[in-house]
Length: 138
Image (tube, rainbow, N blue to C red; front, side):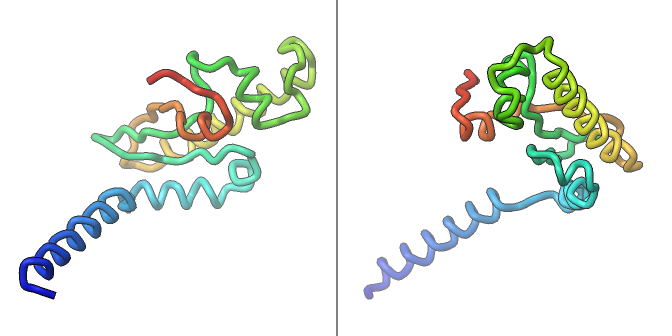
């Protein structure tokens, strides 16, 4: 291998390694909070994984499968197939919707209990929705 090719390969390797570090890096505080969420029985048992995505100025940005952009009936139908297509007024649907709200609130409360976190901002988990066939415009 000539000198130019070797230098190019080394530079490319460093660039790829830097990209890997950039994409795989997780703030240690966010990692600790995600470990806390995973350790909770109710949150761990829920079919959606609530996660802290990033922390900025005391605001924890957390993932959520629901927002005003996606009807809750669609999200609940993915999480709980037994209610897919059922009326939102049905008692089973209402029970599951309350459970989603309860678990999401518990996840928020666990994160906000940390002294460094002032509040939580929810961010729609577009990747999760896309993986389940729901396309949400950016």
